[in-house]
Image: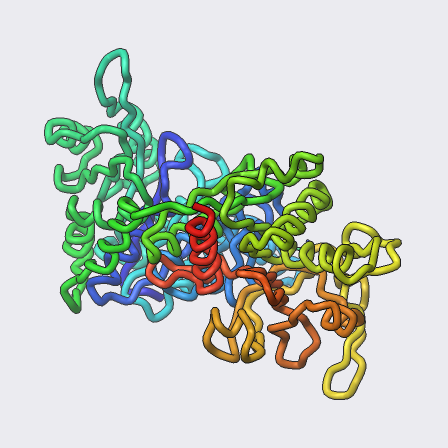
Amino acid sequence: MAKKYIFITGGVVSSLGKGITSASLAYLLMSHGLSVSIVKIDPYLNVDPGTMNPYQHGEVYVLDDGAETDLDLGHYERFTNLTLSRKNNFTTGQVYFTVISKERNGDYLGKTVQIIPHITNEIKKRIKEAGKGKDVLIVEIGGTIGDIEGLPFLEAIRQMGYNEKRENCLYVHLTLVPYIKTAGELKTKPTQHSVKELQSIGISPDIIVCRSERRISNELKEKIAMFCNVEKEAVISALDVDTVYEIPLAFKKEGFDRLVIEKLSLDVKKEPNLSDWQDMVNAIKNPKDKVKIAFVGKYVGLKESYKSLIESFVHSGADLDLKVELKWIESEELEGENYKDLLKDVDGILVPGGFGSRGIEGKLNAIKYARENSIPFLGICLGMQTAVVEFARHVAGLNNAHSEEFDKDTEYKVIHLARKWEKEGEIVTRDETTQKGGTMRLGSYPCIIEKGTLAYKIYKKEKIDERHRHRYEFNNQYRDVFKKAGLVISGVSPDNEFVEIVELENHPFFIGVQFHPEFKSRPLKPHPVIRMFVEKSYETRRIKA
Ligand code: GLN
């Protein structure tokens, strides 16, 4: 159980930035020395987003413990530096799954199992677990007020205001105050309606955060306050900003953190010092120069599916005083003869993670181009696997080499499902059926780095931990062949069974990693792999100029 709870709901429309609002508030409260955690509740029936289409859901963010979560968890970790776990994100699917399993188990002793109290109790239990030992728990309710799916969650948080005492709970409602061009006015009606809806289910918000593209005047704040039954000071304006990392600073200016501290009578422990954060924001807004990186992906139409990766470039760019300009290229477009033209103007080439065979040949072309033209290259997960295939075909002379994921019949399966490996002198066999469906190598795994390699130059240490999300692996059968042909295996799992990092010598920067470095990049601590990739790409740019 946490000492205090802050519930964040959203109204009017989706995509107002509840996740960023929650993360920014967590950051600000932590800057006062408070211990804070944060939980996201997703009102859909999927047990987790692991099986959802990136077009619908955006990125699946992976935690250390292997939980596949909503991308808001990425914002939380980036803003707070906390390491979260599967307790910090749950869905309707999980809640019902638990309750129905209990029912089948006879745990309810013949009672009628109902949404209230059984589902709501399970929700409250999970919220309390997520807040254990913390001064404050921020609870973000996904979806928009008025959605049928969200009702059990709203009922649960309403009850918490009663069970945990009203003075220990704070309800924050995020709404939109749209600007109507023809009238030349900001409109408060949608906010009024949304708050009314919330009040009709028994929740009176204490603080209203208003997203708008124009400044909200004092007069307007008063109007919102009056119609929504809050004090004028409790109407916070959230203007559009250049970078999301500016939001905590903007909230601070509005006195959001002070207001929360007062309303919850929080015992603050220190004066905040946001100067490093402010410097980082300044660096993002006023870069000295730029660098152009090709982002060769499959879902480039939907940037949300590469959220963490995009952010990781912002972090590294800020640290290097550079604007990282991403040139989005659908890998299919690189399948034709003109692929070189599309890559001519870039300083670095990135092939990110992904699933499915569409566009693979285009990725191979991009990698070949990077290898042959000394363009810095970073391959992540599928990008690393594709780099291995490219090397096999064009350097090691294994003509039709492929990943087993895309060609089950090829003679040279250089990337495969690891069915068997040796562990402490014994052969471990993995049942093939357990490789299907949601069974992936997920979460944080250690990796041992070979001294004297590019990977060592990047990490400056021998043991690292990185997050994984994949089924296929480098096929160990080819280690020697590849080594002879010049591929450097610079990172392996501690038992030496999994190849985690490959690289090329005699190239300014060419590296493939089986894991996802982007999940561990933070605004004030850019990920070293991505940082050096950006740095080397910039060097290439300067040489070209
Ligand atoms: N599809 C590949 C695999 O399952 C790569 C996954 C990824 O890039 N995350 O191994």
